[in-house]
Image 1 (cartoon, rainbow, N blue to C red):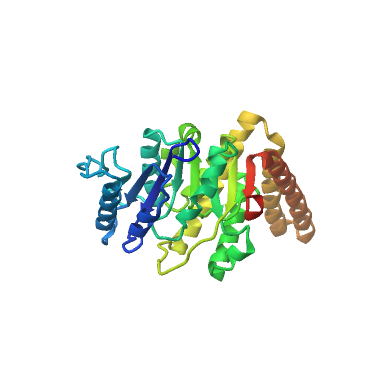
Image 2: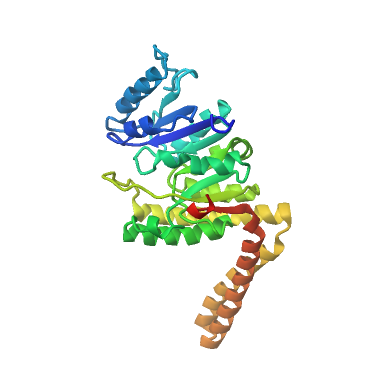
Amino acid sequence: MYNGNTVGVVVPAYNEQGFVGEVIDSVPDFVDRIYVVDDCSTDGTWREIRRHAEKVNHSATRLEVSPTLADGGLDFSERVVPIRHETNRGVGGAIKTGYRRAYDDGMDVTAVVAGDGQMDPDLLDRLVDPIVERKADYAKGTRLLDPEFREGMPAFRLFGNRLLSGLTKIASGYWRTTDPQNGYTAISHRALEELDVESLYDDYGFANELLVRLNCHGMTVADVAIPAIYGDEESTIRYRSFVPKLSWLLLTNFLHRQRTQLVESGGWVTSLGYALGAVGLLAAVVAGLLAGLGAFAALVVAGLVSLAVGAYSDRTSGDALELRVTDADE
């Protein structure tokens, strides 16, 4: 337990042989349950998970490992719970499986630590703190708040990260939140109870869509400065398909958030500003083709002003739902 709260950790893993075992071994002692989800790996990941799970469970003064359950997990008495998907569902699908098990087990806080070894388990308490202190419903790591942490990121990743940060800010309404692809997170039991987690995207856009849904429920998000560890692991993201899919996902989620917040909270200024801006820019394209440069420029300006009004209203209305945690805050 951690300050009177039960803590679970979900470890999604796909072809992480050589990494996932060390992740399991290094999870802090205050974690009550570790849900390691093998997303139908094609290498030796599952064997490595079982081997390290057995070692950890045995070292926790349990002499016999319980038989596996039908879904591949171990009995509730075990600290490490190996779970294996029969088909590959994507990282989001693996996290959802772990979330569901942690929720059913009554974990007060559930964190996610990737199976590739890029997340330092010794810093897990920094993510858990905002949840147990009731300051936030969801905490996520970010490498962009601290210049020293950004230095470790390859230039291509940094550019893509900033681009996705901007798009996710607009879609989610969390305008100060950065590094949306960072999977080092923690979420409260209350948030898992209120969110329809099963309906979320199964692949790498899971974290982005989750932010949108959190805002729709008025939940506070903490951005926690945490460095990444880059080693010999290889990313499985295929950017040619990932970027178009994520862009469409963010657009549909942005529209969903506008509709939800307009109906539930009457945020008509934000929605109207965005709508008029979109109409203005679309009309500018038509005017540019039919009426010339003057009409095009005027409609572009009008559209941009409307978008700015919508964005300003959106940002100011959501400021209270964001929290930043850096070394200076501790």
